[in-house]
Length: 129
Image 1 (cartoon, rainbow, N blue to C red):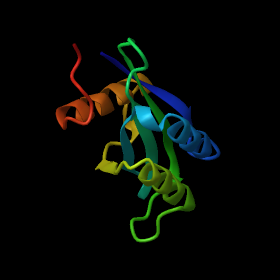
Image 2 (cartoon, one colour):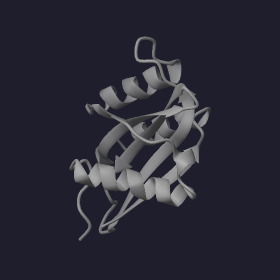
Image 3 (cartoon, one colour):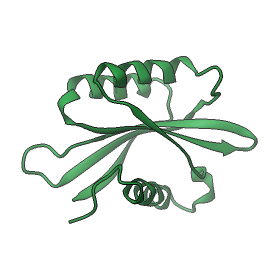
């Protein structure tokens, strides 16, 4: 199974596109994620959803809005609240992980391989076959 991140943007208006993907593909949702990271003393969040492959495909897309949302556990941003509502409406629960910020990686692709490794290790994504 090929798992690949597809970046929608930095977490601004693209959060609404991610929510629309969740609503229109509710039957394909595998898992939803909130990734938090410390960046220059501030916490930021990425929102992501992994979808089951369509049809006979072996491709599992993971759509992500990367690190553009300020994160505060006591007072979540409106974008995070909207994401959580849409995920819960789809009868799913988001999984939250604290991770390293993408800026410590020399390439974005390395960052995404790091995330796939974490998700596979914790059984949130199926192993490659």
